[in-house]
Length: 116
Image 1 (cartoon, rainbow, N blue to C red):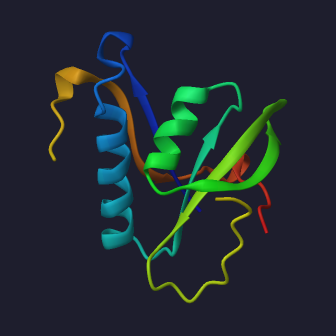
Image 2: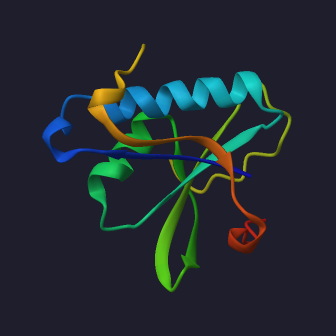
């Protein structure tokens, strides 16, 4: 399972940069990784990040407890994928704008949890 994550400096919030980055990561992931689904783990109270995930075509797939905190598992499935749909609901970035951006990555084995 690969995760798309993003962390943007506050002074760059509200400019669409996180959404642009998340979409670029989604496209890169589906093009370069042998996966049919990508996820984002987001705390429910992080409304802005939930909005980014939704604009990235993701919907809430599951709710999990991770590191003792409740998280939504947002997921997006590759178009044309033959995986059953288990979802439960609905250009270039400059490094100086981004504090940290997670390119899709595989979770270390000690952080993997059962989602099926």
